[in-house]
Length: 171
Image (cartoon, rainbow, N blue to C red):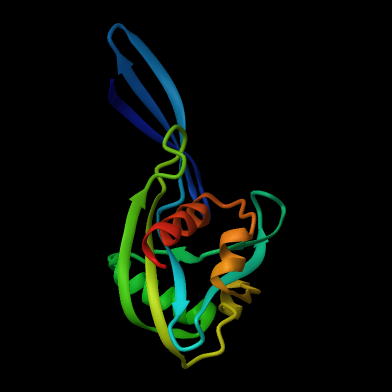
């Protein structure tokens, strides 16, 4: 398959493109959601021996969910710079140690979104967190023990991935 044409069907907070694909003698049209590049981080406070996550309303499930601190990468920002910024905005922490877990396409059949997932060790909360008012964020900080993290029934794929990684690599 080869992309032979791209048009923009919607250009708002996110983009929706219509791609025309050549597949042998056939041409196919497919819509592709383009939210951009994102980061997400599972946070471990080494002094409190607790994980920190967020609870906020999400449009997809139309309810509040508990998930990793996460956000969009701005312009030419690196994933590492973005995760440091997002972690401070959402949870108020500065990072002591950062490890990339993986880079994923959460829904490659319909979306160009790429999420770089990290694990961060922290020890100092220098801000209040809770998100940015100008971005209409209302984020609750959620603290969990190892046992609580492993028993919680998460619904978000990037969070499930990071929790499974933590079970294998962060004892």
